Length: 425
Ligand SMILES: *Cc1c(COP(=O)(O)O)cnc(C)c1O
Image (cartoon, rainbow, N blue to C red):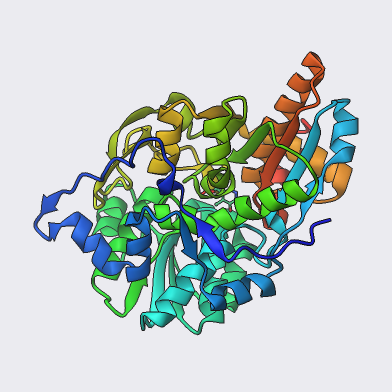
């Protein structure tokens, strides 16, 4: 049934956006142009991919071969037991990105970026991570391309994910608790608030600052930017082929949304379908702890609270927004992808926010039915899927709902333990 080939091109959503992506606003400070400074610490190929309007970008052979090694194409699973449990006429499918070796879709871009880094002669990669899925994926990819890897890890999230951190260490990565004493930004924050929990924004600021002083290392990110959404379109392209083979046409596409890369990569290849058929619904599921798309404003803002980045236009809660230390690390940031922001702004994307405990209970239901434990972020997409399946039941419509199952939650067990201890399952 899923006997499809790995696509040999990524799809560039910028080619089909109804309006061009609004340009970033540069800021000239004592170090000169921020746009230029950040470009200079990133990979050249990724800078080019951020700008291009070419619709199809060839996937290098070495990357395709790694994609095969990690088990791509991933299966598209029909969730019949969930349909039966809900008593819905809807047909529900999950794209199983949790089956990749590091348990999430993040490896799709980590492999591409590590490949470009090795081609461009970098010694190593520097990044930031929240829940650690990106840190783990980059540790894996760096190990596989013989690169060093340094990760600024949001302090509170690292504490919550000790085994994920251990695995990064086994893959040879160096992990740094953020805020750290390695950068002026980290030092300042610790001086004002020695117990600061950290945030993804602070880690971004620290990683940029560190990379600027260590030119052998390239600075890479795990979400948000156009080149990362581009690499993640492998998910949507495979899904499209798999649905075609099943003779199914999706009515609703669902993904959870943090920085927006699994959402953008999953729905991106369906944008043309959406533009020609407005009845196709694109749905983002976010966390009530960082409700950018449902409660934020569409304005220019920095991506980091240190104000070290240029300003980008997207939905934001303000760069000083400090999300509560919940378990859905991957959904805890104040802003998100400009591509996702534009889709929302143009009315092409719906968004719903879910409470963490409700989302985790949907995850427990999934575990009960299938014996697989979704990542806390994925639980938000499952909640949105269940809501849509119930609406389909109420209206008696046999909708086809297709959801990106972004990751596995085995290393997020403490999140499940907190709700088990509240005895509210
Ligand atoms: C990182 C992550 C997310 C959210 O990231 P996006 O960039 O919004 O896609 C969702 N699910 C899992 C499992 C993750 O690791």
